[in-house]
Image 1 (cartoon, one colour):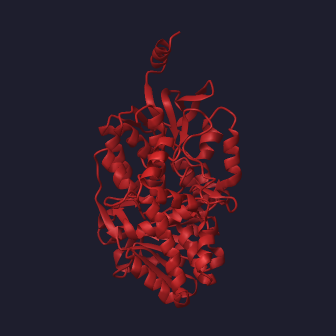
Image 2: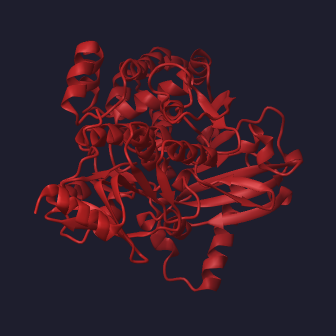
Length: 511
């Protein structure tokens, strides 16, 4: 039988033949899909839920539009190459109006350490130096080194590090930047911070600067990632999408369909079809099958290799799981709050921690976003949105009766609200709406193993060197999202999407 006749029979048997099938419509999956569609590939995205976006989605209740995940968004700058969300939308002829945020985070830390990370770099440094005047030189040296990492990244187009021709080209175009990144790849933030800083409290501050996006302290946080985050907040800035974070996914889907791509909702992938040790398609829970030349999983690596594949887990994945574990999930409070509670000039994003030793404990650190300060249309008149979330493990929410589960949610929410009254006195009395999500909620609606935020190192590793790229040990199967290089965060998974699409496009002969 010829290859042509065999392919024809496959098409007839399975109705469709796609260049790429993407499992999941998180931002990593959607960036991969849109980049491939923009290059002419026939792409199908399969999403188990009723809207796209995953943890960058939204939901509406009683006139409030709540972000599912964090509201602190990188990647919407207008210059350089690290503005990946801007570039992803432009690739499919769409755009999104954004609102600049003058302060990335307002920290409320032990012993009344109060720090605002201003968009203006010098203003941030001066505030930090005012708190730690004896470490003025070290503070500047540390954050300036983060800029050196960022400047290396920001000079080159960010595509697949698995594609030899790209690596050759970018090295000849930017040799010094490439050598700089190679230098930082095996390094973590903690070891670099300790070169310049000796004050133990200031080192704790560097820990929470990392923890607020990596969910691990500085000694386990790769320097490459920190260079991006600690500098881009001053370069491209934090910019909130008008209409809420969910608009990013909505616009990417709009662009995908403009370019001829497809997305199906309520389409839960049950299994990745493997034939002759190659991924060739997917089987849905309702029995439908779709065949594709390349299969791309935006599920976590735990869900992909432990649940979706009908074959033994590859050794490479077993080794990865020895190096990385699931991070905790979150307890989330979505609150409607009367506007007269909020003082003038309140910042959008806050982090509250009363005890340094509890930073990594469940309910130790509280994250708070008030996105309606930037976009008032997200809430009813004279009201604001509070989205408070704090790490929690799913084991603490298992095996409960419905009554006990509800009671435990209400008790946890009351504890969080009481602690937030340190920043906003009278918060409990000002509540107009409350909805509580647990790790079980995240697992159910986001389809993530144990509701996890993503992978974290089991121990101190050598920077990003242990983080996998997009190709897997299964031919024609790729992974994208926070389980791949460079890790967690919206702009990071967009980077993963650009890299994955580039690698797949080369493999499909589209480059």
